[in-house]
Length: 330
Ligand code: COA
Image (cartoon, rainbow, N blue to C red):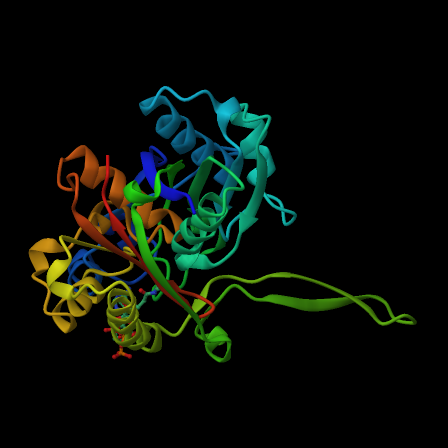
């Protein structure tokens, strides 16, 4: 079996910043409320006409490719984790064309805020079984397009962004993806969703209906409870399968949903809060993009270094949640 490792990371966010004060002009809230309940101070929002997740995803991908001087033509597979495509048939093929990765197979993977973890695990399987050597994994979302900007319970939380990693084959002894643990609880899908609802009949005889997607709807309290109980359990299970313990973790890199969730997970695992990687104060919850966005920043700041053990967990709509444990090799 081949080994797999992350060779490069890149990220991209829109230029427009909206801080909590500005949100307070749209809905009844305050910087103090948002900052204490979530840790978020500002978020980036994609605004340009016809700008979509494709532009952000492509930019993040090109940055990751450029860092290791890799020609896009060498990419075998692109997995775009997103829940906010600009085409229901998928956006990955547009990214493939935009970056000139003409030899790559490309598909979308939809798993909300767990999407990046699931995409990393999927890419690892293709590499470890020898199918592909160079895989571009992108987590990108523009949930601002699906927010009800009059709902203060959700519009304060989300921001737009993209992060990309290049995963490559390596020798088994250099394998960096140590283990993973994934979960889904479909009975809880209603806790966080963007539902499609049929709202009018287009042909009465044939009973043909048409509808549209609604806005993000969330039961915040339940999602909070779910995250702080299930994520530590997933990390613990994953560590057990590879004979490691929470003490071995150098960095805890969780989906950047809420500062209080990050701290509660660390506390439950008895991991020092100094080991938490967090940048959500600047970007809010960027869904599938949040983990690679934070990873890129942590690497730029020389936080993560060679041989560090990084526990990465995603969680969110579905409900889905999961962990991948990486020994950093670059
Ligand atoms: N500004 C001011 N007040 C607000 C508000 C806002 N933006 N949003 C809600 N409130 C009010 C509520 O109306 C409520 O008022 P009431 O007591 O008079 O009814 C009060 O604040 C408390 O609301 P509640 O929903 O109980 O707050 P909370 O402490 O649970 O915090 C979240 C709300 C959303 C921050 C929190 O539940 C959370 O972080 N959940 C997880 C969400 C998440 O991460 N989702 C993505 C996962 S991928």
